[in-house]
Length: 327
Length: 112
Length: 90
Image (cartoon, rainbow over all chains, first blue to last red; front, top):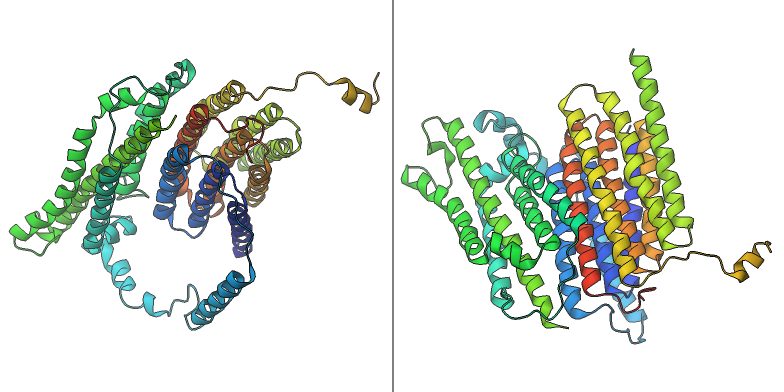
């Protein structure tokens, strides 16, 4: 059984190496963007084999979906080709890389072996999470219980980082509403794509809600659900037009909802402080500590999903409204 | 009974793998873009159906079957639309199909 | 039996990758990446059955949706900014 796992691991990692070499050697930026989508897909497969299902979920949704779309919007502005590399000496960089790699490998020789159960990292915090999570928190998915409850403060930092990225993009790029006649003639309406989009969008939104609220029991959670929700609106933007999408979800509403999501997360912490516990201590939210944990996790995951969905949609609008400046 | 289910599921999985590999060989060997799209679409539709049918037979009447059927339905709805959009984009930006063989190629193949 | 299926799907993925590396036109690469995506869906389903943990099917479903949207995005992009020469893109 482990032989076949090893074989699949080797095949996937070999394909990953080939993809990386191709990304470095090719000069057409479009091909590089496509191949980086393939790289994300291969990484998602490797995560599934390593049994990290939540991470594979996020990698598939973000890396192969949103990242590719955003990078395409970027190369619409920069152009298709990479500049020609001047011929220069390759011995010096190769020496630096080899020495750095050798030093790093020498440094890892001291580390304990992979998946050895007597490693220090498996002996301090992990047994407490694994043993006590069913009784203290009581949800089947242990990743969500660690993410949302035991390490809830770190997750709040992650949500604030996403929000800060939104602030950075909006202050640098901004969303240009189309006021006068556009520079490019709008391509004619495509009925097949529009019918298929109208059919798929409700199911994608329903699936994102399923992923959001099912995150306690299976792979999922707020981040993945927010990304999938924004993919539905991206599909609508692509098959109809940008004005239709911005009429449906106006950017000023989205900006406020993104902030409200972060406030929901922080607000839960403040409410638990008012009720007598620590910041983000869900045990004091309702009378029963177990139910308090469930309510707390539900509320903060909702805040996370709201913020991530609004941020992804706004960043997409900012990137594609930029591309019209170049003929 | 389980022997029949197992045998049938073997047959479906092997058919699916055969179709997948033939589609992959096609995408590599055909000399022209539009033929390659046709080869790739074989793997997107029929190969998916046979492999998922083999897996459905293995799992019986559970939630897993519903999810597999849902995945097949999604792929059946979206893959033909994606292939159509691809060919539309390729044709409109100027990539024309090679429809007839030229006289040089016919002579190379030994015909008159 | 799931072993053979997984290996066959990996072979198909490898050949699609070869086409993505070499494809002379832009559209060959898009086709190869689309095919790679649907094979990823199949691989995750078959691998879940190989390791007796079919809970991974949620990821396969998500990827079936996102692959479609990704291909549509790429095609909209190529229509709006066509590559410099439509027959090869290097």
